[in-house]
Length: 186
Ligand code: HEC
Image 1 (tube, rainbow, N blue to C red):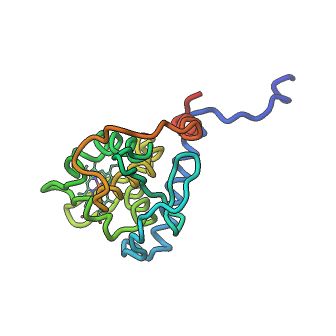
Image 2 (cartoon, helix red, strand yellow; image 1 turned 90 degrees about the vertical axis):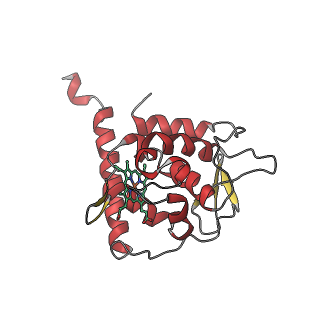
């Protein structure tokens, strides 16, 4: 009997699946709205005009980086550096520099906007033999989409060089919470 009255709780696994589905559907909508794979938007001005819980945004409201005069980077840029090198580096080369196999994302992001980036990463893209895998299902990518975007945007704007960022802002509490929820941890 008690079970009937128990509050409905989604299992972490289900929440995870749901989240991936949300990403996937979101990306599919973006692709449709942006008219297939064409670049419907551009990269815009990367200057940070506001911040919320340690995350910076440009004047269009898209995520961006913040590098202080002494070289200290925002948390997302630092985290994105690490995630890029664990998930994208193998094909796209170190530091977003590209390889014979896949394009230099530090160049791609000079023109490509946030929505197009998320769409390609989540849903993938095939161009003859050249295949970008759909990674929206991979929590190590999906949960760090903005981090990776922000890191590559900093590279595209020459805000950081080919080095592991040394000084970084503290990891924001809100970030830790969102990360744990996304990764299905408590
Ligand atoms: C298995 C190899 C592989 C992996 C891993 C991979 N990519 Fe790609 N990616 C490619 C290839 C190949 C292309 C070019 C596809 C094409 O020609 O349309 C591409 C294209 C892209 C593009 C479009 C670039 C442009 O100039 O239009 C973006 C953005 C992108 N990848 C981001 C990422 C990110 C971010 C990651 C890591 C989370 C990643 N990729 C991981 C192979 C890969």
